[in-house]
Each structure stands twice: as C-alpha cells, then as structure tokens.
Image 1 (spheres, helix red, strand yellow):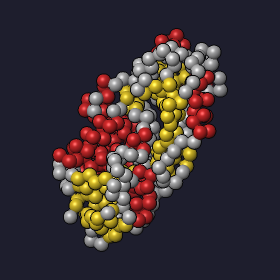
Image 2 (cartoon, rainbow, N blue to C red):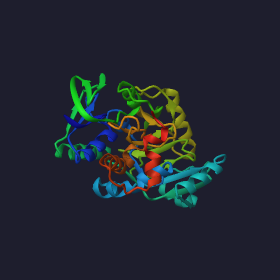
Image 3 (spheres, one colour):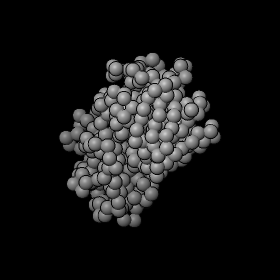
Image 4 (cartoon, rainbow, N blue to C red):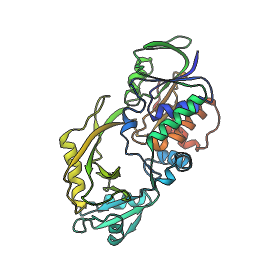
Length: 358
C-alpha cells in the first residue's frame, strides 16, 4: 500500500513528492515519457519575488532562500526592466508600485538595454532582485530528494481509471493502491478529480505562446535584463544567445499538448518591436505551454474538504517553479497536521476549502 500516489510529474508533482516522501512512501505517475513535459518544460524560468497575488508573493518570499542558495539562482542574476510608452502610463505606475520597482532614467535603461528605442520608450523602471531559475536542475533535485527517500517515479503511466473503497485504486498501465491520492495533474487536474469522484474546482488552462528569435546581429544579450510591458502585455528574455519573446497571452483552451499560433507569435513580436531599435529578423523556434488557474487565480494546496484522502496540488498558473519550495512544504505541513511558516490568512487563501467543495 502506497502512502501517497501522486498524479503528475511536473514541478508541482515532483516538489510534492520530495516533501511527502519524508512522511511516507510515494509513487509519482507521469503520463508522458519524461517528467516536466508540459507546462514545466516550457517555463520562462524566472524568480521574481513580487510577481503575483498576495498569497503567491507569500509563497515566493518563503521560496527565495531555496532558489538562491540551494538551486543556485544567486549565480544567475537577471533583473527586470519595465518599459513604458504613450498609452501605458497608468499600467506602468501600477506595476512600479505592485512590483516594488525603482524608476530609472532613459540613460540608465539604455546602459542595461543598448538597443532601447528612445523615440518610443518614455519611462523606465528596474528591479535588480530577479533571477533565472535552472528549471532542469530544479526538477532533478526534487526527483532526487524523492528517490533518496525511497520514492518511485513512473513515466508513460497515464491514469485511465480511479476507484475509491477503503483506499484508492488507480489504473495506469498497472494498478496502484494508495491511502492518499495527490492531484498534481496541471491542466488535467479537474479531469483527475472527476475521475476520482471528487468535485472539480473549475480550473482553466490558459495558453501562453513563446517565440525564440535571433539576437540583434553582433550583440551579446546574455546580460540583458528581462523586459516587461506594463500590465504584462508582453515580455522578452535572453535565452542561450537568443531572445524569448511572448505576447503574454492567456487564451482559454481545453487540456492539451499546446502549440503556438502564427498570429499570436506575430502579435508578441509586434508588441516588443517598437521598444528596441534592432529589428527582429528571424524566428528560430516557437512553442506554447498551459498556465492553469483556479477561479480566483490562487494556488490550490491541501486536502479536499469532502474527501480528505484526495490532496490538491494544482492551479499553479505560471508560478509553479518560483513557488514550488514553499508550496510543497505547505502541502506537507497540511498533510502532517503541523503548523506552517506561512500565516493563517495565506494558508486559508490557498486551501481547497475556500471553494466550499462538497
């Protein structure tokens, strides 16, 4: 009998496995042939402490030490540069406040971004405390923690049936029996709940598209900050000698292996282009991922109020990597019945009980 059977091998499932493996036996079931295949494998990979709603920011703050000191992000400084233009003043001012940014001069911004288009950009702000996340190292570290505690990770194990008696019986190629079922299935989390006879939350997958474009000719972009459009209308980030550019789209779609549409990619490049003097000449690659949100856009962490043996670890909404150290710790604390380092209001804001599930 397994203590914790975890459905989903993305960052949510693997981080949960790492923490829960300290409390009992665990098995992770991943439907694809590799862990982190969907949203986790398509992340922009940034740690920005002030990004998200208050409950997300609380998780970010509690995760900061792990990312910087354990997973090595302190050696991957990035910084965040906000670029404002005519028509974005209100959104720019709001972002400066909510993301605790410092306004800087155009001269200072141009020192950070040599291709800054001063004919279009009229105001800038900067936040140095943003770092890249080595997502592969993060996933592998969680997997190693789980395996070191005797955990097992099974790939190519798509769940096809779930039954509940005194324990959970889950069919995924073979049959697994478990005391607790952990739902870390990302975009498919509501489908897993329905399969288990548990009320769904109303999770909505949203498509986010990304174009990888060539860096301006002759320029090394490695030290450029992440670039951000006010109100999160677009962003761009250096990546292995090129640039990732996204329109920050949020298109509701069913759970799927997401792909990017040409018109959306073109929109992202069109939003980025006026802010820089170097013309985008070539797209190298493109892809899309799913960011799955609960109705209130907060993570869902804890036991289902109507079925305590069903544990939610869902609704990461694009914050999965940066919140994963604290989110998985909270999940383990809730399961173990011990106090969390997070305050009571944050714990309640993240609990599945807030939806009144019956």
